[in-house]
Image (cartoon, rainbow, N blue to C red; front, side):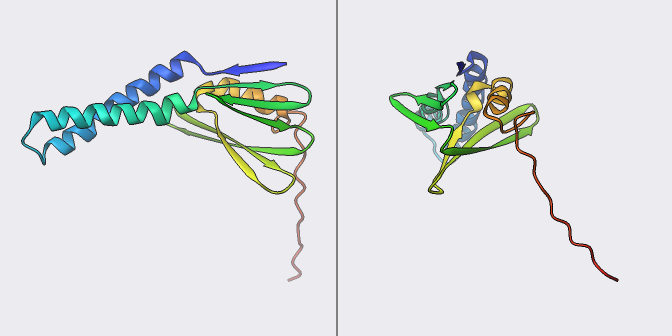
Length: 150
């Protein structure tokens, strides 16, 4: 059984990003208002919304065993049976920042998007290898070629 948890450094990094985002939003709004109170209010509101949406809602524990992938975020738990779900992943890197997204597609074609940014890229890549999305267990992609007659 493999367990992947949210990394503390990813939370701290996102706290720093949230602070700067809230400061920029408050600065822009304060240019349109003469009251200092409004700028501070916007700063704390933007910071609270950022923390809730980006950090708190994405704190997760992912458990992978032989039969299931279980994703627990807050009070919500999603269970994906490995024999009935296929997975694909997307990793986007930009200036040292990584966005890691796992997509689970069930047999009915319903796709579930799982934001795995807070578990970090190292754990995410390890999980992809254990799931068989990458590495030796991943399926080969067959390419059909058509030869043109000139």
